Length: 105
Image (cartoon, rainbow, N blue to C red; front, side):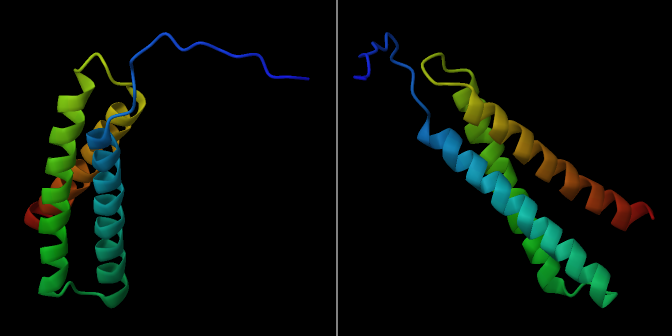
């Protein structure tokens, strides 16, 4: 059977910034997880793991800013901005938890 033509009456599309924010969130979560797990297995954390944490926090902050700016624009779909906000929020929360545990525990 021949497929019926469908009309799309919307100008909405996925934002490139939101997709980049999701990628930054994934990168920061993976790098924080790898740094924590390798420090756990080695028993101590060399200074390079601290640099990884700083870079992951910077990536998360940039991704959060991109996700938030795209989430409030009405001409974009909301899946990627919301996913970016969740992933980057989790990465920022993990970095905060690492700092809290290092300072008070």
